[in-house]
Image (tube, rainbow, N blue to C red; front, side):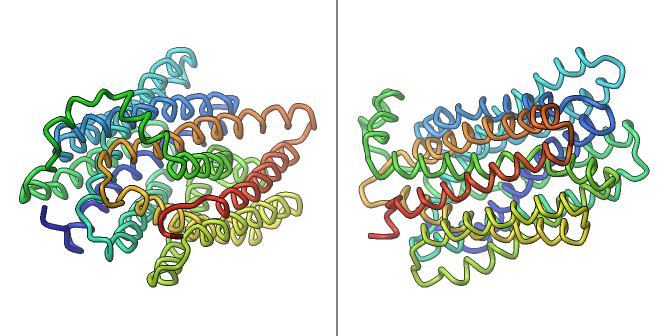
Length: 421
């Protein structure tokens, strides 16, 4: 196989950015509308997004299937089509909740389930293709490029949608969501056009296709290195994901910001991640121990949540913005460290099943996100009811997330990916 050049790697980054553009609509905009504008309990969007992550346990199956087919592109395009349609249906379902909560929630549940399936089918083969078609010297920078472009997709979408939504209406929300979904699929189709087809499909031993799915997964899980790293991914993502559904409602409830303003606040976090990723990619270009950077990012993220707690308590909007920006930068440091180590684990001499390996780590992340998003939203509701204050309810969740990030840093220092050998 001919290794990918920088332009081809950037095209994969466009696909990742397109996935992120649709996902951020649901986790950011629609979540905020359900809680603040429609007055629903935070546990409802929390459960919906958790369902979308639970379905992503199918990442291992998607990776296994693309391994057997020897081609990744058809899987990615099909998955992105499902993601685009699901994003639009989720917006329609959110608007329907204004008339009938039951009907809207049922429709949103279907949309979130299909969204999770689409992300699995598109995202896992994409990462496997990236690992297989980049040289060892370019693997770290290529991971940084793809994730930076995904974060750019988050930030650009959040900032643009934030402006398009004002003055806010449910009809405007549906129209904006439809536009984002169409653009995302169009960019994906163009980016993948003849990208993989210029090379011979992945070569495999004659008996490789006869290995059952369960046997392939069990063989990888038996590797202590893979098992320990998957455990680290779970704890770190659990710490990160608990804020995903409450950050914008927190800014709207405690600081009185509009939907457009809270969406732009969210874009600060993505912008901070962009800066943190660039800085870490530059700092680690000479073979630094990536898990150390991941641990440092976890500690920085914990500090960011403490600052966010103080901002909510003091009511300082400048401190709110600074906390979110700093937390985003620390998240970026963690992300590059973790992703670089993951890429190194997948691409070891004599190892096959890149799709299954990526699926395993992706499933660990999905389980953590499902639990984190639901627990974060649900715990904020419970704490608010028990403590009698929205401010204290959000503070409880932020403190818990800070402690989880400290624990994640401890796990990161004990993970032993190949980059530390």
